Image (cartoon, rainbow, N blue to C red):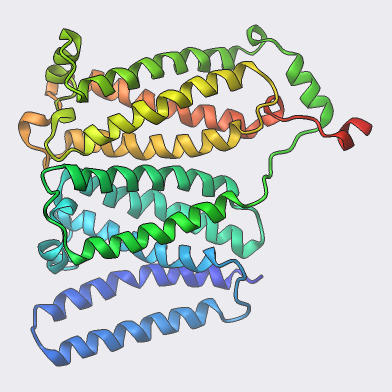
Length: 369
């Protein structure tokens, strides 16, 4: 398949910049002719982009078109984040005034940046893989984890936080995006697995005990500490009366008590899902043949990367009330702990995906060879 389709998607995503500016400018003109002109211009731009995408051969995979639309929305989200922080102006001013108040929270800011940067890159990589006929299951699973964490925290935080009563039709439109994305998640999981290794390398990896795998031993130590950390923060948001929990909240992470409820939901998700994940991964690192390990680490590393990026950014963001921000003298410790908590799972994921021999089972065909 020609690479023109992927190039067309990239061009389409950049069209969101003039479209946002055009709509925002014409909306404030309060003219029916202006609205008609904006609508016709948008349709014309999208039609030209679609014609460019389908110039030679239309991709068969329906996720190509889903991700093509998502690249457009990702650039819009980046514009929203930049305008919220007053870096640019006049692109989505009307939307920010009329949208759900959740988008104007510190958590909403960080979601906009994550979608506009990381998700945008992921969509382009998956579109390139589809265009070239390569597998995109690995990067797709990383996106699945990131999307699920983002969606669950955002929806539940909206429902139980201080903005729970502020629901507009735009929130229903967001639910349509969630529904399509969930379908895309299931379709990504259904892609054939690409993990493979030669039978001799599988046998050699299985013979090595844990002491002969020092990197895995370090990961096991991390998993034990990470399990304790995620359970501890879960107890903090559940208003544990322990002195340690109270001191930690006051001195290191007061954002956990933010009334928006996003950090509370996120820490509860970490305790209820990341906690069991750490235990399962401990088993997978010690017992050979756990073929689910690469996939599981991909999903979890994507989820944790999104969660920690949002949590760290929102804890320091000026949109967070001053009383809930990380104190200046505690920021080095806060950043060290949370950055390590986010980066080590990425290293574990890379280890499991780049050297999967220990986690694979030899097939009868390979044994015969």
